[in-house]
Length: 101
Image (cartoon, rainbow, N blue to C red; front, side, top):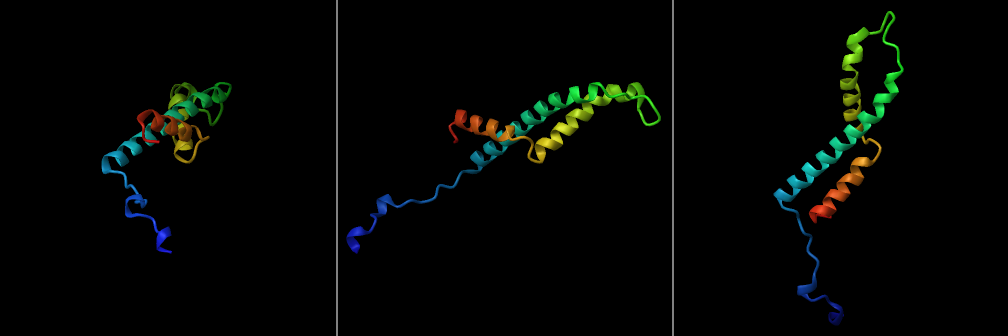
C-alpha cells in the first residue's frame, strides 16, 4: 500500500486568494452588474415612450422629464436581483482578460 502513497511534493493544497485579488474580483463583479444595469435601462426606455402621462394619475411633463431616472433605477434593481445573466458573462470575460479565470 505504501507504494501507492502520493509523494508530499505532489499533494494538492488549496490556493486561497489574497485580499487584493478578492477586492479586484468584487470590483469586477460590481462593474459587470453596472454594465447590465445600464443595458437594461436602455432596453426599458422604449417600453415607456408610448405611455400617456396625462389624466388623473399622470405626472404631466415632470414625469416625462424624470422617466430616464426611473428606467435607470429599474435597471439597477433588476441587475442587483439576478438580471438576465449578462453580468455573469461580462464578469467571466473580464476575469479572463485580467488572467484571473
